[in-house]
Image 1: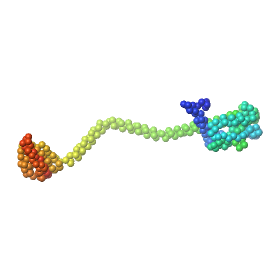
Image 2 (image 1 turned 180 degrees about the horizontal axis):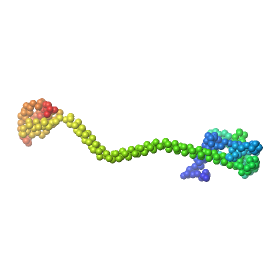
Image 3 (image 1 turned 30 degrees about the horizontal axis):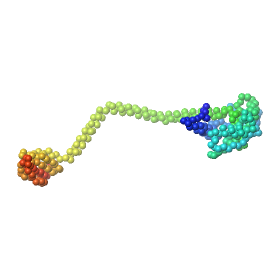
Image 4 (image 1 turned 60 degrees about the horizontal axis):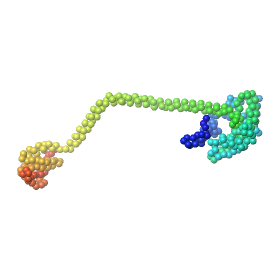
Length: 340
């Protein structure tokens, strides 16, 4: 049993949380408006003492005998009074009703038997019908019923019918046989439903499992194939990389002119007495700089070459003090560059 008076977690009182959970569970399974109860709970078979007598005389089977008899107490022996409570009191409803019964009963505490039923419910308040009967009179009714049934050990639950035609059980005289049958039926349905759901899930998961097995199989085959062809893949990757480098080199040099023949020609046209210290090509234009004993004679010799045109000296010839030679710079156009 859970001690609801001492529910604390790190200093927080959880009693109200627990009571609301219990209340929700009770309303889900045992409230008269619950569809679960209406479907699985055994049908009520309320009978008064006169009905029992007629059954004995007619020798007819009493419906629900195996679940006990739901006996209605005589209305003249039952005290009924209404009670209205705030809806927030419902988690403590048993305690609140017991306190009201203790204040309203005309009998001694040990002689008082009571029950209640919620006759109306709203978001703000609860309306209840409270019922009281003396223990002596209740036991007499039950004894009379067992005598009519000719079974002193028969299970007899005592109920009362309210002025609003509702039925309320007397808490002290309930065998819970119908409640136990209800829970057994509910448990059986839950087990069957759970088994069916598990079976359906297994059925739905079977294709997934098969697919996963195939995926694992093909993944292993892929890994084995990759391990066997790893060297081939490396060689192929190297070939692809080399091919790309060659292609890049071809693209790069395809836009460049081959000036090597011109280097040979310039060397042939230049006497040994002339020193070249700079030579540059810009497309079809050649620029040379150097030292010569007579730069004008060298310029004149180059102008006679048919492969050269537009021979110019962008700056005047100057005498180099150290070597005693003339410093020169000449520019010229190269003819038929692509043909050489």
